[in-house]
Image 1 (cartoon, each protein chain N blue to C red):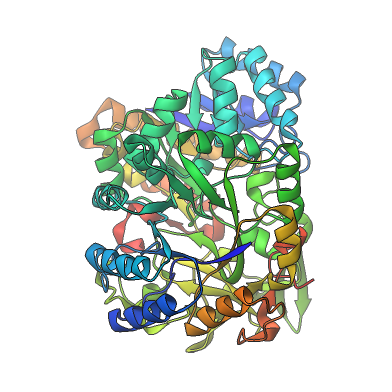
Image 2 (image 1 turned 135 degrees about the vertical axis):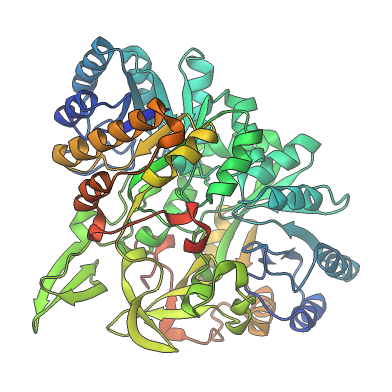
Length: 333
Length: 286
């Protein structure tokens, strides 16, 4: 089982690899990836350095090109594929049909992973991408239960990668317009979910108001631990409940340490850690805990138990300092 | 440009659905999409019921398309979907790439619904090569986007724009309606039947924001592009989709077909929006 960790910059990449990641994923410094925050990501030169460093350690580097090209601007996305091919990354993580087509026809030797943004959750979708573009792997959206992952793993024509830890996206990825509905910028075309420039905190009468493009997403006490403001983790009212509640989900992170044996038995090939936008300290903490957990499992699968100290360490870097099994657990649904 | 009626996105009692489609049969609407696209736990109508409705609409002169589930999670859902695709008579609206594959395998034509990620001409052409006859523009895209796509070359497939109704914004594994009522998804009692237009969610400043419809999240505001219709027509848009929320949607579609440009019948005038069409936040009213 591969431990796949995020790298927002070269420092994080080195930290992840040295803390035990088997592979890292990263993006170029433009809108060809869905985490195009200022100060993050890699220039072609930095990508080259990243590839050399990773190769020297005998590990793997995946380049994320997971946004959808805009009409008239496709060249930028094609160039990203060209750069990846000439840099010698180990795989491309792609969502868009035209880019899969471009990469597969120009660089048939370059392994393709289907990005979570392609939102493939069933056998038919996986078959389509396998037959047409020979994808090797698909990243599953965080909407399937453990049983559904297991069922899919029995019939899938490609390897499966799942999200193991990190900020919990509760919607089928790649098919959520909540952020663009409020801010006008779409994660699918190069903006990020809840772009930072639209976020505003305001203190008023002893309360903290969290606004996204002036829409009140949440209202909390000043000392309350809050996550990064996104529409799906805000507190709202309804016609039959005037008390503001987390109608969709509260700020929480996904943590699947306890599912490790089940994921392994389902032949999941890769465990993905979310958080290219997070600090090197986060990357180090999460990578080292997961390395220990995977090694513990591999050493003695039958005796595996999640250690409290691992969970404690992960809670500290979790949103709202709470974690969940998310959709993997049927009761969450 | 013609007017189409999108699939009913809400869970209504069976009798109400049948009554609704009787009214649709009596309307002038030439193209009707039909089927459960949100949740396989909604079993008020079964596949055979939808086929009956499809035949009834066809007999009244409508072109009928069977809409399929947007988020397929269980293997049983994919099996059911293949049955729908292989119905032997009606074209399907694919709302997931699994449905595209099912149609492609059988060599059948299909329509791409608004939840398929179509963001550029090359992807649309790829889908067309697999059998796509028409696509519904993803709701977050704009007139500018469509202009650009069409300006590259005249498309060989038809274009439909989601022109009126509450917009589909997101899909989740979680049923927000059941959760709100304190029910587990597996024992949901099909509780979404009690919110025939979804459950309105407001911010703590009483600003309507979202509409919870089972596992789907919709816009609180109703998109209304009816005043843009002449522009759309000039651009070459083939269908203006009305997404139904009640019998008034059928009346609206008829009025649009009669050339009434500024219908005043959407119930919450203050809640109408058109931001996406103008490259802005979706909830904006330009």
